[in-house]
Amino acid sequence: MRIVIAGGHGQIALRLERLLHARGDEVAGIVRRPGQAGDLLSAGAEPVVCDLETATVADVARHLEGADAAVFAAGAGPGSGIDRKETVDRGAATLFADAAEAAGVRRFLVVSSMGADKEPPEGTDPVFAAYLRAKGAADADVRSRSGLDWTILRPGRLTDDPGTGLVSLAESTGRGEIPRDDVAAVLAALLDEPATIGRTLELISGDTPVEDAVGAAAG
Image: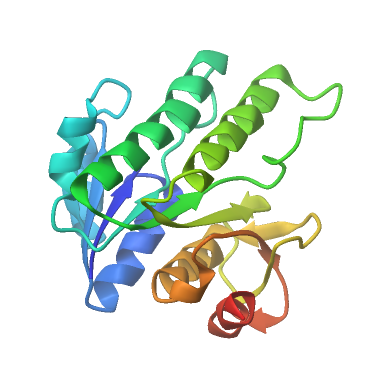
């Protein structure tokens, strides 16, 4: 497959790029800064410089032409304010979905966040609350699209611990942590499982091997 990843320099995206390259897929990662290209090349991915906060749908659609799948893994990141949660976590996700439809790329995966389906609790940090609302709005937009074969993945609290390959994946898992390694492994497996189309799935560490967990979630 040819797979295009938005947010190609992110920590999950770089891990996913390595996995996809290793299994023989062709992968491209969209990045904002030319200086990030070297890390993508090292991961086996083609770097595509395009700022999703300023690009047009047509700009992004050109980079998606000929792709078999698209993965939205972009985010404003830590240290960003409320405004960029709106322009990246919501706006760029919507733009990327528009571009995928325009380019005829149906398979569409979203890296979202646990808690994005409800109003943040009272007392939540305002920036984090804005992030959750932006993610929730982006997810709702993607779910409304009949032109995309979408799957939304909502991981728990991300860690940099080594992946175990053992996860819990379901519509509702409860709170928990998950290594970024295992998030990337689940994304790679989801790309190969069409029965997960139209599903919103939570992900935390568990005791089920990734392939089995994805198969069970698809059942």
